Length: 359
Image 1 (spheres, rainbow, N blue to C red):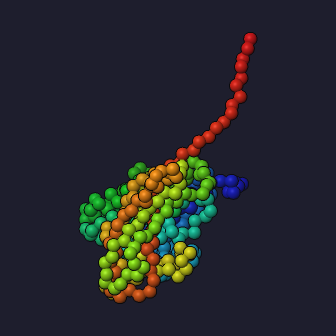
Image 2: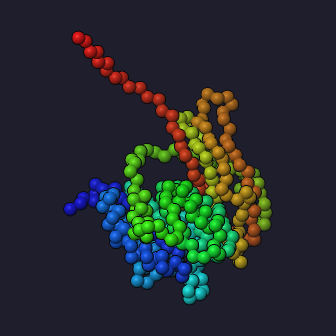
Image 3: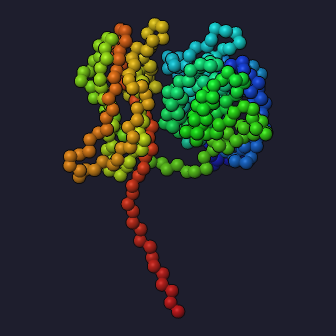
């Protein structure tokens, strides 16, 4: 009997867009699951938990028997108001979902009930734009950027499968699927699957989700951000110039490629991240608060703080234009999500005995 307590954990969420065009792919992956899981866990023993979800719909008689929304609300304590960016289903019988893949990945990274110290992975299957576009529709790369940022922040590897069904899907759709996987350390596939079919694909995804490295447990260094604004309140239908300042307070850490993603949220409890919800749109789905430039905002590298420098190094700032539209009442907060890489400089000393061989 295998002791799972000594094995590495892997939490894999397999989520499929429930457009009718993906029915055959969903069925094929579901049928291949048992064989693929057995092959992957035999080659790389692990404590594997796979969760199968449909994006705003389900596929009867397959493993995809529960929706993303239903799972997050029923198993993770998420309220419907926290899923506002996930569009509602279409009012058609044969196409129950809009294909909001980027938003689904974002919400999974934030709210899924990942096990402690488990390798986190998502396998997303779709055949439309990650931003919910339809055939021939526009590509919203910012939604893909936001999904990448959420995955990096949560330590989630994202694998993708682009199920091409006809020539009406632009190549830009496929490029975003590949970019999402590449930048989060995942695998990317395009229909039809190579030799071995979905059994080989799923087995590779499981193995690719299992890290063979060790994580260094330490307090995470964070850059400091400050909002600089001439006034504390923004009026109705006003445009104001504000600035975001990023500072490195560490003397032995360099922050590389600091990138910020902005959103406007309402806050019930200022200390509870889960209690933050997007500011509702105006009638007609018009955003109530917008800014320019739109995210992402790049700060570049922040060098270590030099306490002996005179004058002290200044913060790196970026100006943005905040516009309020319509009559927005109450208090809102500017929510800052960010990604970066950290480099450390350490000085150490060790004394080694010297052995002298003599004849």
